[in-house]
Length: 168
Image (cartoon, rainbow, N blue to C red):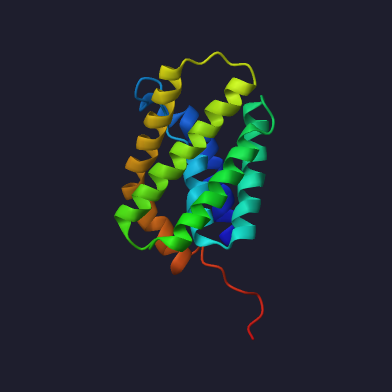
């Protein structure tokens, strides 16, 4: 059941930005829900599994978007690594600190996306990059109060909690 729910959340994080959040965009800025999900998973898992999630989810998002294969793979791997590192050093039960972690990590991830996009030949101005980084980071941070309490409780006590197959 745990893996089924994670797969559903993954699919929703790919589909919702192009459908529902298309109508709730601010000047064309939409949240990066897959980055938000990667942050949450990296905060609640060990480093190898969070990093594998970032690599796998990023590769699938690259295939889903159909361009620049490797851009989101690298980005979500860096996001998972940074999220894990910050969650290990900061208290993740605190709601404000979690919001700050999401804001910082999303900003770093979006700067990496912008840098890789410039390397791929896209002609973005500095104002466009700043608007993208600030807009997506704020949007993801605003979604934390709506999403994190449920996700955190589910990872700690609910459906998403890891249960070993064999008891010792």
